[in-house]
Amino acid sequence: MTVDVKPTSAKPVVSDWRSEIWTALQREKMELFAYLPDGGLDFLIRRLHAEMPDGAVMLTTEEEGVGICCGAWLGGRRAMLAIQSSGVGNCINAFSLVTNCRFPFFLLVSMRGEFGEGNPWQVPMGRITEETLWLAGFHVFRAHNEDEAAALVAGGLAMAFRSEEPVAVLLSQRLLGAKNL
Image 1 (tube, one colour):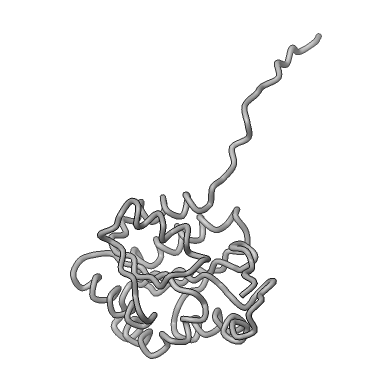
Image 2 (cartoon, one colour):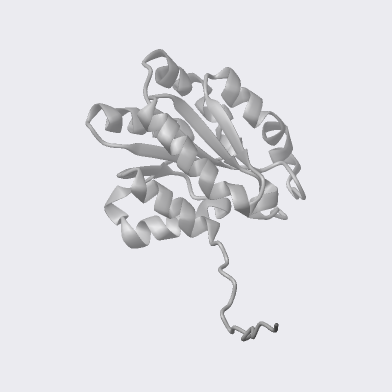
């Protein structure tokens, strides 16, 4: 018995983890995105300005994003903060607002100071970002590769807004690509 197998020209489906992250944010009805400009988060910032320009809040400092996100929650809106790992240290005092008042909070962090880093000033905070967030009361999840990035963001969003917990998802430098400067 022979089985006739016809060749197929269908290309394998390639996961676009960046688009899947955007889909997860939309599914959780995120309305406000506080951010500082960052090359690692450029995929999100560009999409935000293209599809939800009224939801984009560009910050001058990371800690003002904490207040904006907490205020949005008090006003009945879902917000998130997207920053680079070096900015986590700038938010430590502001994070006490999140934990003491039990605000649901979602933080997306593009990591610096890791794999292939070209700027020595990024290394110290990159080394302690995860532990710093954990000590500040956050649940911390780190995406190392494309296969897990969108699932960690989706799970983190669900945990933050359904369980009313502070959650941070770290996008590793290996995932995002190392910067030379």
